[in-house]
Image (cartoon, rainbow, N blue to C red; front, side, top):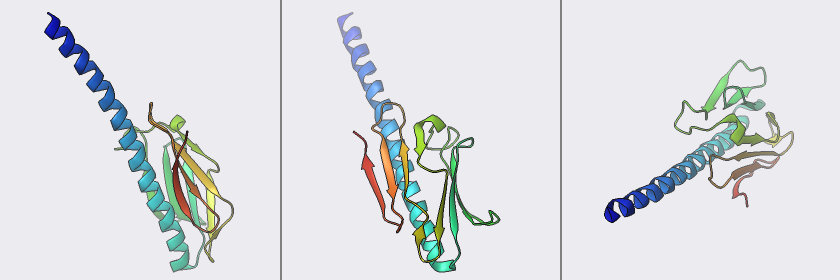
Length: 139
């Protein structure tokens, strides 16, 4: 009987730890993917010499890289529960839902995106007006 109790406790601790690790991995992957997308947006502006917009759509939990008119969609990054990231809209905080980058490679303002998932440490991507993308942990 004692062996079964000890085995059950060990299993419960392991499952909780695995869920926490899985949440951390999802946040880390989402942050890495968004970082690449944001850097790509600055590269697109440099290549095409046309403004690029990054739009956060909270209803669909996704980021869209598009031209100024919204006709050409360069990239769509879905982060919702139906994707590998399994994030909720409530776990994503964006400083501005529309972020525009102009042809010399300067953005209209700075942007920050904070992502949390369960009990994982929140991670933040900060983008400066000049295109510097940095990732940090929230304390």
